Amino acid sequence: MGSRSPRDDGRREVARAAGVAAALIAASLFCLFIALVLQSTSTSGGGGGGGGVREERGGAAYSAAVTVLSGLHPSNDLLHIGTLFPVFNLTVHVEVPPGGKAGGVCLGGHSVAAVVSYGGAFLGEGSVGRVCVEPQQQEGDVAATAWGRDVWMPWVLRRRLAEEMKRGEAELEVAVPMRGGDVLVCKAKIGGDLSPCTLEEASN
Image 1 (tube, rainbow, N blue to C red):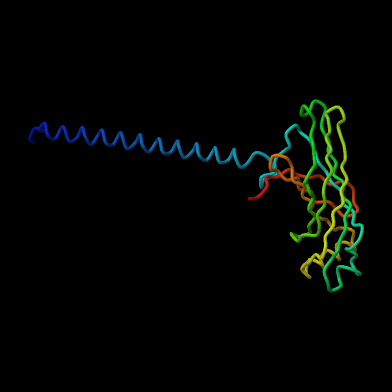
Image 2 (cartoon, helix red, strand yellow):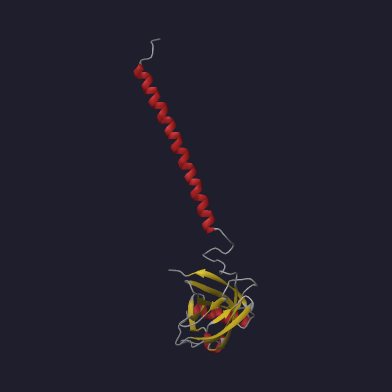
């Protein structure tokens, strides 16, 4: 066997260095992938709500109740051809735990309107008066009246809502804009007790 030339030794050194560099690059890319996966999990996980649901600053809890005053009777209104003119009485309840957010938690105010819907169909809206609850008060309520004028509702939703109202199971969605761009979303049973609400990020 012949002796190795300096040129062969140089080629082997270059190949060995290239192999080491490739291994280091592969290890770095793997670590970067793991870090991105962990970051994605921590950003989207965080709680059982999902879909942008998160707790209000200061630990405040919200709930709402809704009562139909007129315009959505299962037989006289919903199952008759024509547009609707519903009127709702809304109550939003705020609870602030002792030692909660300094300065209290405020809801409603100038130009703030609650929107009532069912199955994604708009039913009415109305202004919400301002209420602020301090930690020492612990809780407070604000009432609002929402109404719709000449509201069109798909027939399939009319029939479903009429059946649910007859069974006492109908729920309406109530959305109230909050300071900072969030939206208070409540799903309250018609004529029922207060139902819990969630604070969600407003969709673009």
